[in-house]
Image 1 (cartoon, rainbow, N blue to C red):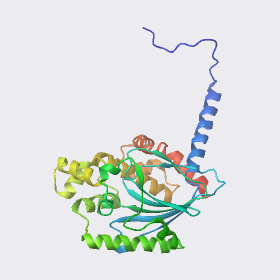
Image 2: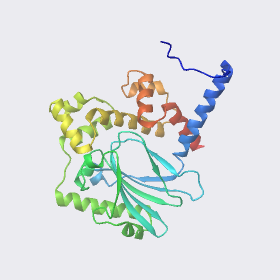
Image 3: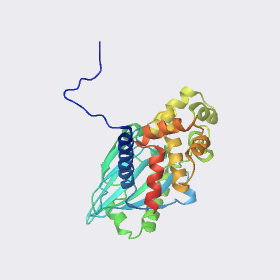
Image 4: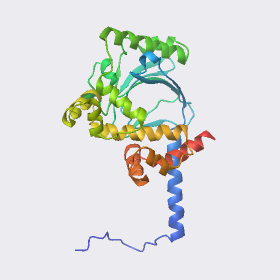
Length: 288
């Protein structure tokens, strides 16, 4: 049976030149949309050394009221973020769990966002909900560790707000006598060495079986170990392009242990919605 689609009327197919131009136009539109995702004024601060095993970074972003940037695409990074949103006199606290795929988030115009991003699995010490309950969702809460949005707003500067958050996190961790486990250290080792992106390697670092690794990673991150490793490798590609946007993509793929550049392209597109080329081009254009 002929399963080709049926067409009614006459359809003129584009010439080869027109097809190339159309593809270039579509690529330009994809890059333009991606560039919007880098538009807000974003500032970041590293955590104190004593908290660096738990906190990845503090960040603050502002959204111009008349700017084009009103929707943010959340890209999976294996982390949990606690975010304070301030719009004039209104404020709220939102917890973003770990995501397995891209997810849009509507940003309010003229808003300021203050965030604390925890390293993979580390929010379990500080958030009442389990990683599984937070997976692929975000929810509004009255406060974080007793620190409400109004209290955060009273600290006028980004460094002062970050210091306030660091203090409440440090007190909570001290009260629990929390310390990184072998799994936490193994995940950090993989990120630092940019190697061993497979579940078997992670299990070997912890000295446990692959099945035990499956259960433990799921319990602390809400993600499967395989998906977590895929996400962390793509995030490493992103951070590398942010610091060295001129890097050759084939070289980047080799450095991160992908079988070839096409393998990296597939993984990158699946987890971000864009190719590494599109992402890198948007970074370069935004820097100009």
